[in-house]
Image 1 (tube, rainbow, N blue to C red):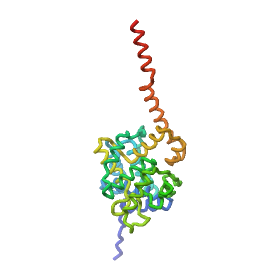
Image 2: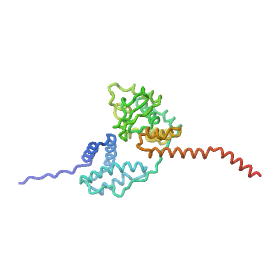
Image 3: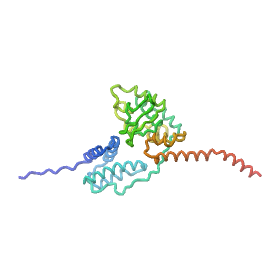
Image 4: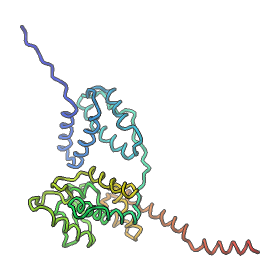
Length: 310
C-alpha cells in the first residue's frame, strides 16, 4: 500500500503577519511603526472568519472595516496599513489582487486647530497628581503643550533623553519620525514636573523604562494615550486628542510671535510645507480679529449716523 500524502494546511493570517513584520524590521522599519501594523491588522482580522485566500470575503470585510462614519484621516490610516499587507500577500502569491481594489484614499480637508486656553487650563486640573498615572498624564500634557512633540516620540523617551540641568530634551534618531535627532528646549515648569515624575519611579526600573509608562513600568501605547485624553475631553465637553495638543502648541506659538523657521525645527518638519499650514491659520486669525476689532468700525459707523441724520 502506498504512502498517504498529507496536504499542507494553508497558513493563516497570523503566520503571514509575522513574516510580513519580520520583513519590515529587516528593511529598517521603526519599532513604533511595526507596533502600529500589528495593532491595525490584528484589529481588522479579529472580525474576519473567512480564508485568507478568499478575495471576495476579504473585500467584504474591507468594506465593513472602512465603512461607516469615520473621519477621512482615520479611513486613510487604516487603508494604508491594510494595503501594504495585502500588497505583500500578492507578492507572495497568496492573493491574486489587492482586496482594496476600487477603495481610494479620501480627501482629508481637516485642518489643525488650537484648543482654547480656557479648555487647556481645565484639562490640566483633571489628572490626579497624587497617583503615578495622574502625575504622568499631567507631565505629558505639559510636555506636549510646551514643545509640540509628537505623541509617538514622547512615549518613547527614556530618562537619559532629558537634560534637566540644561532644560532640554533630545529626541533620538530611532524615536524621531524623520529619523533625525533634534533637541527641544523646556520651560522651567516642565523641568520641575519631569524631575518630580522621575523621582517617584521605582529604582529597579532603571534607565530603559520609558519616562511616560504605565504604573507597572510597561510602555504606554499611543492608542492608550488617545483614550485617556478623549476621556478627559468628554468630562470637559470638548474633543481632545494627542495631536490636538501638538497643533495647539504650533498655533499658539505663532500667535505669540514665534518664528516660523524656529517652529519648523521644533516640530521636526523636514520642510516648511507642513509648518505653513499653521502659519496660514494664524494669518486667518489675524484677519478675523482685525475684522472684529478695527477702530474703523466705530469711526465709520459714527460717520454714517451723522450723514444719515442730515
